[in-house]
Length: 307
Image (cartoon, rainbow, N blue to C red; front, side, top):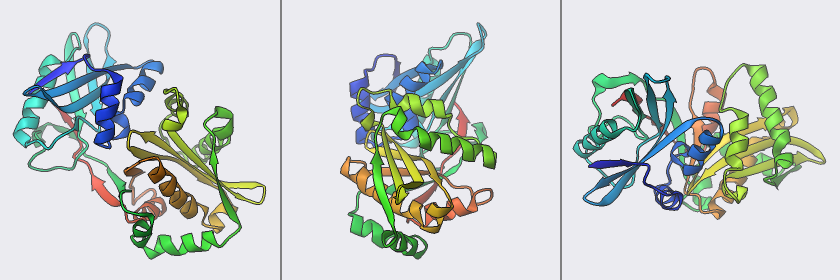
């Protein structure tokens, strides 16, 4: 196993990432956005016998001339099944060749649950993993709908019979700015944090064709906007990023309809996997129930490890 830093190109990375339906944090455009935002990003290709078996994108925080910390979030992205022993060799190569001067530390948060094939020692885990809801979009829309819990299916049927109309929103900033403003307002009202909205703007604009990075939907009743939903696209996968609704939209179950129409639009674009985001049954029980009612699989990741 050998980790080679800084030798890759965006086209090859994008192709491998898309084939694996990789997570947002390992997408080349995500790293490019971090760079534009003032961060430091390093990337490695992991090879075995001349074949690429993994990708690792890390965000680095430096401490002057003393050294730095590299964080590989939702990675490395394994492109082929590997044993725990092989992964352990890959992690060792990453750590030994890490291109950070001075004291250097490498933390990884694998995009997989704890297992015998994780390749990391439990003694080096510094943070427990979080849970998210992952949806396989490979089945037909009919099969996906059949997999919905009645708590999702019945409100969806009601929304389809209502006065709601769903529209796809353009990728120019002015066309979706209202949704970003609404998201900021609900964050302020509820006192929670999320990915900085300026990062979302930069991510959308990080490719020449922003339509490859985002899908935004709007639900109206008459001439009034009552709900919106934004998905960030990364290769053949997508992440549910923003959802907003007002009282009228809630009463009409607009989010059920938007998510359903979103799945349909994502499938049209060749998206195979949808990450609905974190599951927190304590602080956000209602949101967690909504996500789980889609039939999505709840996955708890292994956590963060010092390599």
